[in-house]
Length: 252
Image 1: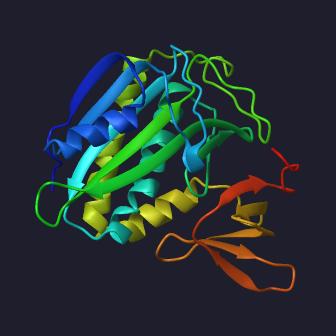
Image 2: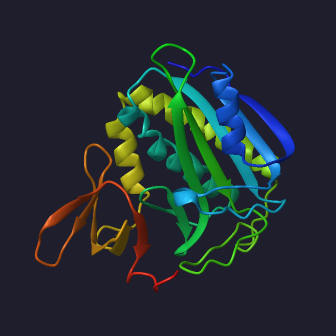
């Protein structure tokens, strides 16, 4: 199976590439359609955080339309992470990026990219629009209160946003073929684990009011993160912010 050819549309400035892609989908577009912008004036990350969006970095969102259940479409988070990992590896050879559940990419422990996936009912009967928003730090990186960040330029590998998106779009198409609308998720899961943080890494998860600590034990068959406690108990994590090591300071 080969994916439908992907269209890439560049905008000088937009509030949010995710919001623009969602509006296109609500108006009947089905994708695959990349909406990319030189800058965002209202970029968003997970949990409603602002995503600082100065010119020079990559801000792009991919609109896709599927008839699969939402739970299956959530697997696109792992497809996306693999595509971004491949892009960073190509643009910055030797950087050895690592995947951190659910959707961060780290180089040397510092965040270099983020992924935000949103969905809505599509105008087509029984279908869903999925928007995969990706921010990749090429020229700049923010100063974050609760974690380190970096960029390709800081690693000595500056890259042009259009060049980065060309690599990303090609990699995404290839991994979507492997995923096969959910039928190939076992292959995606194995590939993700091969590029993830080492098993046994100490993690802390902030899930609402709960703070859970343990050692990374991999992914369950549905993509939930497995976290092991000192007592040997294994816990499934299906949502939350994941930090390496101790929990961040209050207010971070």
